[in-house]
Length: 79
Ligand SMILES: [Zn+2]
Image 1 (cartoon, protein in one colour):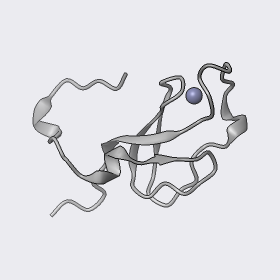
Image 2 (cartoon, helix red, strand yellow; image 1 turned 60 degrees about the vertical axis):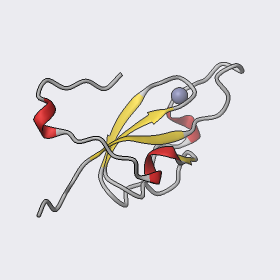
Image 3 (cartoon, protein in one colour; image 1 turned 90 degrees about the horizontal axis):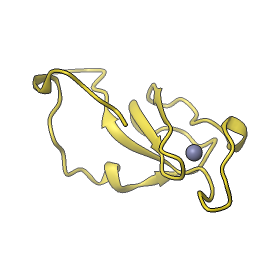
Image 4 (cartoon, protein in one colour; image 1 turned 90 degrees about the vertical axis):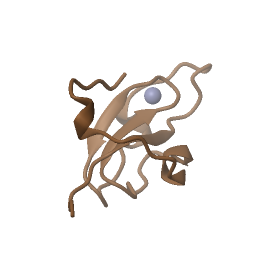
């Protein structure tokens, strides 16, 4: 599970981007931390980069396919 020390660097959001799953090998729509919804593995990725493919790690049948979901958005261009 992602963790942090100082809450002042994070803010809660209700943006729909946090509710969408992305298949392995697809483009990451936003930079940040993505969680595999099958096994809870997390990765960090830059905007526009390709999310890890199906061969990235192995799942049990019960875990299903790899589905990446944005859990922390990284702001590359703060105002
Ligand atoms: Zn996984």
